[in-house]
Length: 240
Image (cartoon, rainbow, N blue to C red; front, side, top):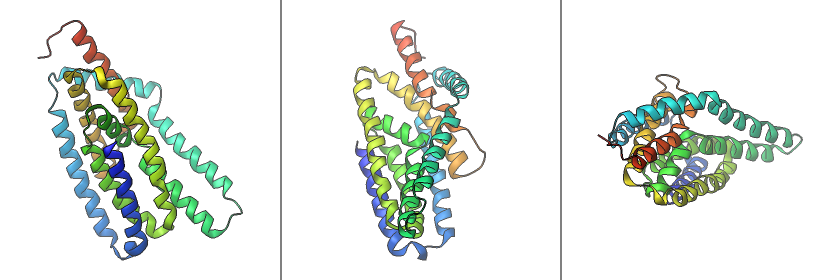
């Protein structure tokens, strides 16, 4: 859970900076920093992909996983979850004080951004499975910058978004650690390679905004690659 704790700390720190001095930071500085982090995220995704021992494994996993993701509409499900939570909170805050509405708006907006997304899931799995929290550290920088902007607008409610991040990512990391204890090293490496491709998609689509990619639909590939790698091990098929 190291990565999740770093993430929570970044949100709290960014929130405090945003409340104290966020309005003084020019928008162009925040935008440029996001682009820099996008470039780094893209490079890090390439680095992860090079860990594969057989290029056909991540390729087959991504193709099959993406088809599955589109069939079961993972991307739509993620978006609908965010909309449902937002609508419920919008309805429940009717008639409340202006301060209460501002608090809730900040909490919900930040929580949805930080929790609902491929990087939160992928980073938490990697943290729990291999103890590698680098991806969540990158996410922490992104969340920290976003929190500065949100806190300067919505106030203290944004800081409380650290709680759902702690619970959501922490649970995924713990589950991944328990389930993945028996995985061999090559299974972890292929899963890491698939994660690298998804991370590149996030960088291109969300951070650099070069081309919109339905990265949510790629998430099932993380489970497909485990099945393929385990089958290869089971039948003793050569990896390279």
